Length: 385
Image 1 (cartoon, helix red, strand yellow):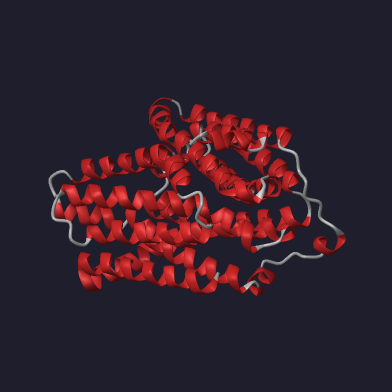
Image 2 (cartoon, helix red, strand yellow; image 1 turned 120 degrees about the horizontal axis):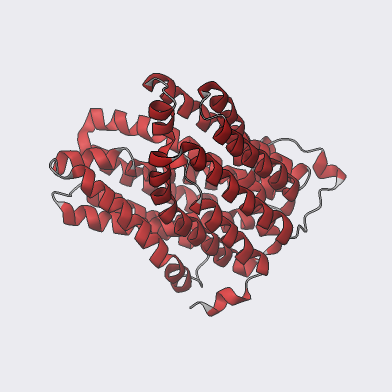
């Protein structure tokens, strides 16, 4: 099963190592709400406003990174955005007793760090042969989850004991990851004069297949983010005595499934087209979230979480290979910006939509709506790509 991965370019292993290191040190994000409200003393309304603004800035940063990596250079974007984000983390460590300075630095960091993802994804797409795109995506996804499974534990310790060290570690690990990607992954893409004139995302939408694919994935992630909105509320309704503890158990189950099953699923489905893999992932999502609608105890919640976690693997590892198939090299930077933008837009819309459905139709209506949306996304994927 693992022999196939030995044929991957050296750069994929470097990018995976960088991803693990970066997410091991991703200690600020899990506790950002508490950092802003408790340690820095911001009011809850201001904290909420800062977090919302951070999402907006990240969307802008992702778009900027995608545009610039097509117009100029993938590595130039990684270098500039990565080291700027690193510097802002280190400065936050030194100015932790000046909340307004931290706030300004956090805004700069949000834009700078968001530019990296589309550039790095495009950089790897250019290097990895078509038949290994899904293997490379699986490797990088595994590294992300491996690092993130440990990072929050370190974050909890640092939050209680040393806020400056928390920012400093986030900056150092990001800097190491950027250094590895910049110095040990070679760039094959060269922007010619014609591509340098392009400074638009809108021309991507002339690609009808890419447009249909993007709309489909938006719908999928609007449902996906109900894991953080609808699910804890449903557990409070069904299991009121132990809902918080059980929600933590479900999230641990999700992380374990992703780490254990990423390579196995990629191996079992290796002969299928990427489009088919994505559609199977949507079916897993529909079945998993649909089970919540009939769950009257812990077992069905566990089963549902296990099933949609399998869907998460297939969708998350299939998006970039699908982009590779749908766009030409000169558009890969901008197209790679779509996925992180979609995730952030969906994260913003999902709780709003979930709250409306929940208030109008209750929990059964919420989970039934999730199934209907996913079926619609699946049909859109099938007909448009």
